Length: 220
Image 1 (cartoon, rainbow, N blue to C red):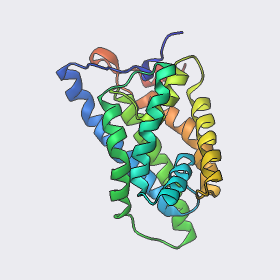
Image 2 (cartoon, helix red, strand yellow; image 1 turned 45 degrees about the vertical axis):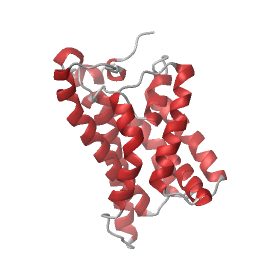
Image 3 (cartoon, rainbow, N blue to C red; image 1 turned 90 degrees about the vertical axis):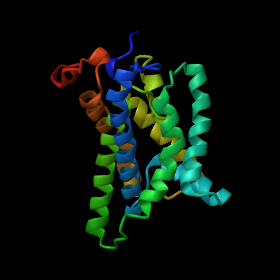
Image 4 (cartoon, one colour; image 1 turned 180 degrees about the vertical axis):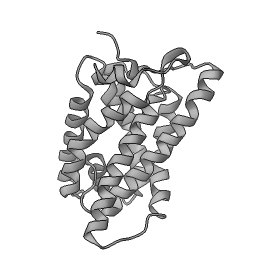
């Protein structure tokens, strides 16, 4: 079964393609880091993966960002049996996004008003979804967790279903370790898949300098 255009990865891009795609990748990583930070600091329940990261951070004494990086390296091992292709974006994401989240959280203001916290939560989820669309859509290789998602989806399964199932599995493991679970966790788990899929269809870059037609993607 052929891979969807938005799941293609340029393992060895030309210099021209790298110049075209790298800025989108870097912006995407920064955007998703902001989204994650907002969800964390809303304190209404974190994303399923971050439930796991929090549990491991509390148990080990390592910083949240360090755990994000270490878990990412472990997840990359799961890519081997599904034959997922990596790229320069995979390396950049794996080694940077956790530390960027740590740094970004220092800039997010602390708020106590429930309405503002819910706004941070919803805004964070949408922002993170845009980041997913940008950096996966750059075609330079997804991050370890999203690569797991796209690698399985490339076998012919709907992207949003795969993402939702993976998020729920991470949630269960993190909850067992004492991670922060709340209403925001449920909202994130069931919304990040459809939202990430929607943005990915519209933000991925075409191959050979030709960008896809968003309307054609919608009609798939």
